[in-house]
Amino acid sequence: GDFWYWVPIGGSKEILSSLLCRAMVKIITDFTSVVQFRHPNEVGGMYWTLSFALTIGSLPGSILFYENKGGETRIISFAWRLLQILIPSTLISFAVFFINIEENYRETFVSRERGKDLTSRSFRESTDDANKAHFIFKKSKHHWESIEENVRDWVQANWGKWEEEKPKWLDDNIRARIPVEWIPKKRKRGFTQRKR
Image (cartoon, rainbow, N blue to C red; front, side, top):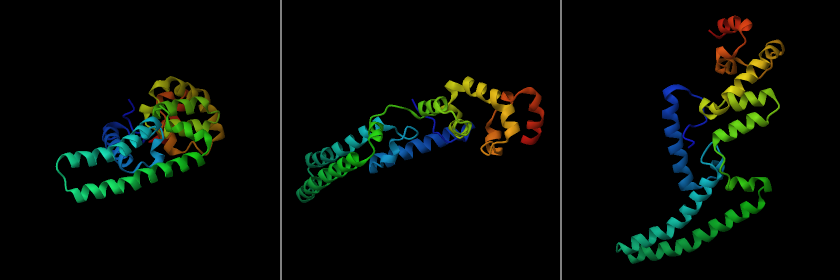
């Protein structure tokens, strides 16, 4: 699964934040179908599409349930009339949106890529150190555990260059997220003192 939320809080707080964020995003997605939540770090494309279809399908189901329970005829009649407007207008709006978006975004509606898959792929495919650092150190460690050895090798291979060049992206926040044991030994002492 993809329980861990992408925000790098760390420790037991990350469990609570993941529970709260996943529940909030699910509820918002189910009731509003905000298309941005199809991002792999949120609910993902395939789940978003399934949720959208279930939401549309649950409307007539809810009316039938109410009708079978002996609901008021006036309310049932109004609900069916409203449904005849809501479902077609929603589907037409979505079709117009889908036709007008860039073609390469269409596949994101059926993507099964998870947040941690996106993090790993983005790190592997990036050639720029700033992007790699962004994809790794600004995400929960749970999103990149599977490639931790690759990340450590990348840090160790480039640390000397970064110390000399002092890139803008290697600020105190990013430095604090790099495990001290990954820093080559001859530079470790000075870094640790600065980190404290």
